[in-house]
View 1 (tube, helix red, strand yellow):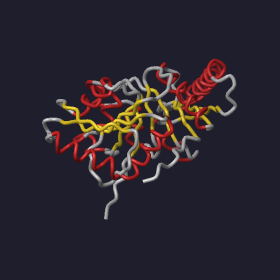
View 2 (tube, rainbow, N blue to C red; view 1 turned 45 degrees about the vertical axis):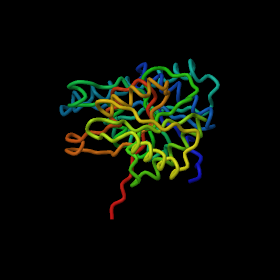
View 3 (cartoon, helix red, strand yellow; view 1 turned 135 degrees about the horizontal axis):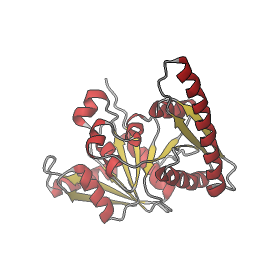
View 4 (tube, one colour; view 1 turned 90 degrees about the horizontal axis):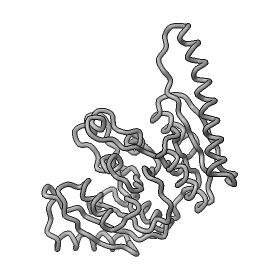
Length: 285
């Protein structure tokens, strides 16, 4: 399998002007410089429901004020962090945040979404989740989630994998291209849990077969034992000084998401490192 050049020419950064969003913007600037691409900032203003005419008039004025305030904040961001960047633009739109980001991504042929996140835990994670989690679940293009400020380079990419062959081709191709873009070392890891326990000799044979099938280079093969997959991924990443976790997501929605969840979304909510995700497309007969 040949390494395809990863496309990061049109990068979208959803921006609510929080510290994680600014961290995402700064990281995306570095990626855009490396890819010689363009960077688009998007701020979404949620529209309140207003039925009374007087409230509607008041709301229209408020929305205009919010838009102008966001535009002023964008100008300050550009002056502070992108003084010499000619290929950074910004846009303010109205609507439901996740829906607007999804539509904007399709309409503008975005290649990559880079977004900040505070994460989510406890009851909020169960009932609401984070915006980053929702974008990861639904995005048609790869997403990089960032929380803390990261000044490269990306040297180690952790790639947790189930080692199943079905529906992996596109995901592995993207991960190889990601590795090539950052010139990073890849860690292909199986998280060995009580629920999915395998003997190490069996797992290492499967890891080796997987690496050979996909012609993985500059790659460490590893088995990491832990009580559950999500925490195991995060602990292994810390142990190996990984900068980025690359993980596929199944895009479950509705009842399937509530009952089964998603390992990728759990990692997005709880992880502190850069997290790259891409939707695994299933092919049904």
